[in-house]
Image 1 (cartoon, rainbow, N blue to C red):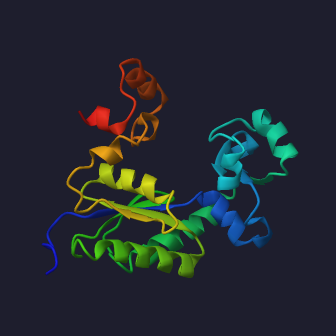
Image 2: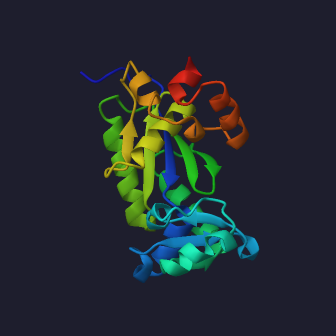
Length: 212
């Protein structure tokens, strides 16, 4: 028998390296290459492919600081095209609304969805269906994290990004401590650089320690 339907289930759908994914959609030749997208006036790096991340190129890093790595490794560089990104974002959000009309758009590449109408057993399957549909209809790859709260769904999404399936559900897991212990403090939702330094100074290095 299926689990009680009224358990709160929140999914965070996050487009993977969104600006890079948008550029790759119209330029298939760069799909396997390291790619970065620059901010207004080409000042800083605001989106990186996994290949670029593996080279040590950091988010928000000034272009001039990464220039040597970029040239040496033939990294493909694009100026930001916000009209393109906005159009594709709207397509993604419209696709999500096919599953639930009441989505909460969190940013240009993220949205929360309420999946509480689905059973505990079905929710991960639904997440995979959402991911496959978004990819098929828009060409944009996503990661989906599902949990009882927005904060936990953000953590689930962080885990999902490292999985081939791209979907992680924390629904039904009673003891989350082993999972939270692996989430570094700088990866916790809402914890910026200054808070990270503060927490680390006080001996807090992961989400489990922060919770306690």
